Length: 220
Ligand SMILES: Nc1ncnc2c1ncn2[C@@H]1O[C@H](COP(=O)(O)OP(=O)(O)OP(=O)(O)O)[C@@H](O)[C@H]1O
Ligand SMILES: [Mg+2]
Image 1: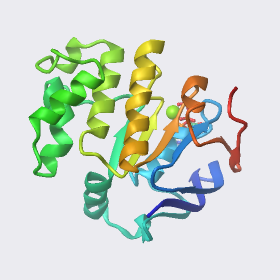
Image 2 (image 1 turned 135 degrees about the horizontal axis):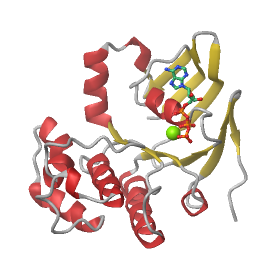
Image 3 (image 1 turned 60 degrees about the horizontal axis):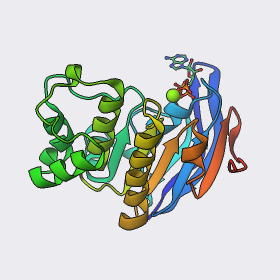
Image 4 (image 1 turned 30 degrees about the vertical axis):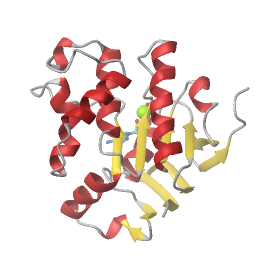
């Protein structure tokens, strides 16, 4: 029951972004990935989500080789197993806040407005359910994206700089929520971050380089 990459590589033409990435994320494990801008952190998360194609190696979830799935099967796999917080949020502009957050549940035929409301309160969006994304601040949008990633209690949460737009107190609150998903529900959390406060809470901190992932000393 784990998310694994074996010798994963991503190239554009002949130019590698990264190669030789070996990662194993166990259920209930929180891994922080750090690395310089442009090294391929978002690309790696997209490969883990089977949203992007890789050039070398394999991505496996519970023994299923995601590379063997077609687009429809990948979409089904994501819907059932994955919560993704995109660096650029990707909320749907014509749906209000509550509809955006509730969308994963709707797609699974499990609508649960009370749970959506509870999650909105937990990320500090109480009372904003009827707003459209264009009527929110950057930090509020980020929290919509986080609530949407957690609403269906996925087994895997992939989060790209999820606290980048938040003040320290709100960032702590959001990290509490992400950690609760791993600690209480046994989900795997892979978090890309530049924030020491977030990396400090991880079980392991890994640094992405052009030639793979290395253990990084946790910030003190
Ligand atoms: N279509 C493309 N063709 C060629 N190179 C690309 C293409 N798309 C992305 N890249 C390159 O891939 C690399 C990895 O990008 P990615 O967004 O994954 O970096 P990142 O580590 O997430 O950076 P940041 O910390 O700034 O978010 C970058 O150097 C980028 O220029
Ligand atoms: Mg990025």
